[in-house]
Amino acid sequence: LSPITNALTELSAGVFERDPGGNPGVRLLESSVNILKPIPGMLYEDKALEIQGRTMADLEGGIGVGAAVRNVAHLVDTHFGQAKKCAPWAHNASFDVGFLDAACERWKLAYPFNHVHRCSMMLFRALQDAGRHECYRANLDAVCAHYGIDIPEAERHTAIGDLTATAWAIDLMLRDVGTP
Image (cartoon, rainbow, N blue to C red; front, side):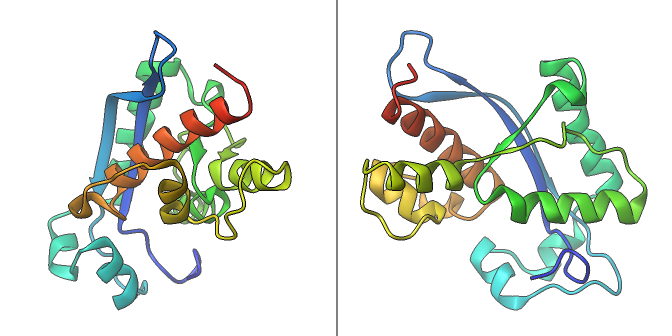
């Protein structure tokens, strides 16, 4: 998939809090989940829609990219005060960030985050390098399987499911490296 020719189908973000008592786990404080209206001329891969459990008809009821970026920016502003204070985590962040960068550039939108991002996939690979696990794959399904994170089937490969899985994975990986 290419951020130049393929369109986003969903733009979402969530703010999670780690357990204040020091126990493993996270709690979703707030999320902005936005299904995006199709953009004429952009490509929508059948396999990508299938993985997300969506159809083009589902996207027809979505909102425009600009409105979705503004919704995410509002979430960032509410919790962090301004975009430059929020360096988001994502799984396979460079993939997601590439699509968000392209959409913001295409529509001349303000980027809703700090341009520095953290990648849970890279952290998982670093833990492998450090001998903490022997998982060859680092996709989100493999990370969830390794840490015993159960995401309901209906939420797998949706933004809220991936947000929740990534937040749990980050919490457990940080504990794996000794960060309470």
